[in-house]
Image 1 (cartoon, rainbow, N blue to C red):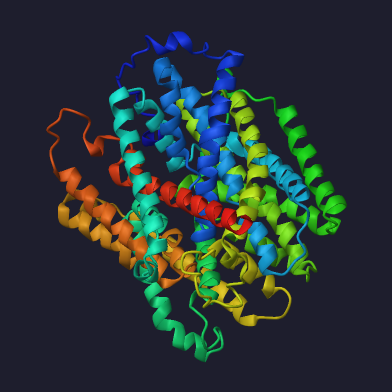
Image 2 (cartoon, one colour):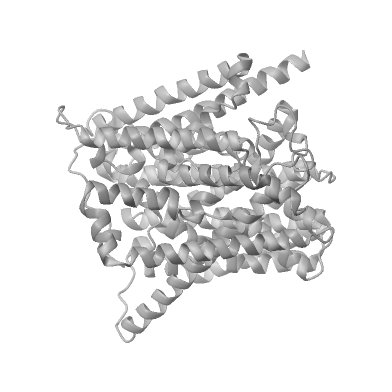
Length: 611
């Protein structure tokens, strides 16, 4: 892999390890792991889980919170000095697993929208637990290919690795905590104010949407707004040709086109990666393989037995406890071996895990082999949603561990503990949010103009329900929309790949201010990535507008900061990992603050009804 994917040298910071370290357990001791586990399970995991669940209910995508967990976890490991980065990595791994599971709450919401009978809570928890354990096992199986051999970038994994190195500096850690804390307070207050002030609520303002845009920046946010505008303009034509009802919003068919575009782009990326793999295998043929270092070694036999055990557990719980057909469950489990690989490649290349694409495509495949019951489709395709989420997270965390040299077996153990805690919390949070906010129980797919749904777009649920409703009766226009999206995604991604391989263009794009401006326009307007613009088909126009506002604000701030010279002698903004920039930390804090406000308002509302 190119040299730029190699881990950069650790910053030459020296943490003060005197004082507190005397009272902390020795690195590697049982007490050390108990300390890390308690912090991750009791503080970092629930914080990330609440944020992820809230984001998937309110917007339809989620941030697993590795950056936030890494920064907060580094407070605990700071006294250990540079070696503390491994402990912080263990904690963020566990917290991200909790968050990834909690983000699967919309699976429960989709059952409500479809009018399906609700299984007992313990049955859902057991089912989610088995799938999550199976997913991380499959993800670990592919780690030697995607992380060790192909060395895919996994941008978030790279960012977290750099952050954990950098945060051995107490001054840098203090400034990061201050930015996170201030923005969390702002998000909390902003959410409460929007609840009380009707005029502000009418604008569709959401601190988490604004914060999400700040994290991704203008190059990702503007394409989504462009698609939302095109969709609004095309709505009358789509109504005229029968793709939309008279009062339907664009996203009712736009989500299918967007899913197709992601699938088309993923096909191109997968083809390129497979070609590169084949070429590298030919080059490396005959070369002696180096023995793996101790931190990288995994017992393959035990891992295979783990995957087999939890695959069987998933099928058994689904068939014997939830009473779903054995055949469709087996097909869903088998599809995971394909989609965890495909989604892992997409995540490694683009930092985007197309979980909803895996769900929707699996529904279409199950329908092709005879599925007609949306309830069966819901619970069987849930296997793909959870497994691709946790399998991709496994690979991303291993990429962080690869760059830091973190023990892979120990990291796996932290991850599975996070899965167990997240399985419980995911169902509990889903029930809580739907009880506290009844709008979440209302079927937005059938009634897209429900009052009060502005804040709760639930795009993930919208996509799942739309796909499942499509299998109950013939909808030729849905397949045409999917084919249109695939064609658009293929064409654009091929054009982007060819353009990026064109030397004169790269020289122009990187050689001057005008070239960089032109490159920005290509990325944001003329030839945007399908992974970026697809969001514009998933949510309402006003949500995309706030998302874009956050992205533009962040990019303008980062540009101004990069031009301003540093006078303090501290590391300049553009010398820090991208995910530690001011706007990225502010965006993450706004999301966390908004989520905590929603939790607080929901708890107060439930208490009022009980008293």
